[in-house]
Length: 131
Length: 131
Image (cartoon, rainbow over all chains, first blue to last red; front, top):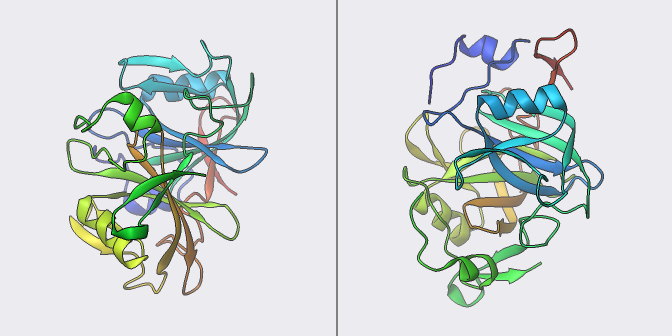
């Protein structure tokens, strides 16, 4: 974790936004549907993705698999308009509330949310079941 | 990212739970208040933390700052009982719904949620304001 540019008190209680990108230059972002409150997805941003998001009001992420800046919805139409961006206590995680265009979904599998399976431990071993 | 033990289709559509820990042995977990749906915090788990969580039904994380297994609430009383654990499409993120004991909070600063500040760009520079 890159060291913060200010102390713990400023980090937690101050008005300065100092997102703490990890050693790979990324910060994690939880994205929530503003209408339903459902968690849609979890993705990462690098500094340019965060800056583009704040400047344009449209969610941009860093695709780790494609190693590219990713304006969500460019191919799917599932553009995410930023309603509110929050940061957590130690400024190493972001929480975005968004309104989704297109079909309203966020997951490349076609589901609205990427979290479409729950873990069950019935029978002793962990398995997945659809929700 | 450690390679998954099965292919993309099995990863996304199968019933096998194969959480993909990153190279540092961690997987990210978003934790949501089961009663309100609010995002409380974001933390990481290693394999033992995940196993303990599933076995005991109480949230365990890996504290990166203390480099230790962390049963949430051991000192604060803010024990988190697991209601439901979900995994995302590519199985590199977890979503936990929990009921919080003690005072119902999750953040070490005393707030219920770690996400108590929003980013504002009014005036051209990004600043934080309390929500």
